[in-house]
Amino acid sequence: MHTASLSSKGQIVIPKALRSELNLAPGTRFALTIDAGRLVLEPLREPEFDLDAIHAAVDALAACLGRNPP
Image (cartoon, rainbow, N blue to C red; front, side, top):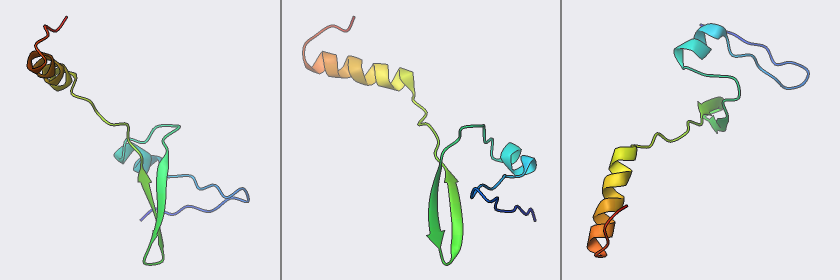
């Protein structure tokens, strides 16, 4: 179990072992919720895009519209 203390500025340092395990980088934003009296921090991750799938979908849409993709 890991522990942390709340600073006078309301800050908590997440121990390095947990940051590494969760792949948390400086600047990571979190959603905070309360669940049954517990504070839950959930990292907000940037969505991962599949560019090949996006290009295929655009090409399919262009074909439906009778246009040739660039």
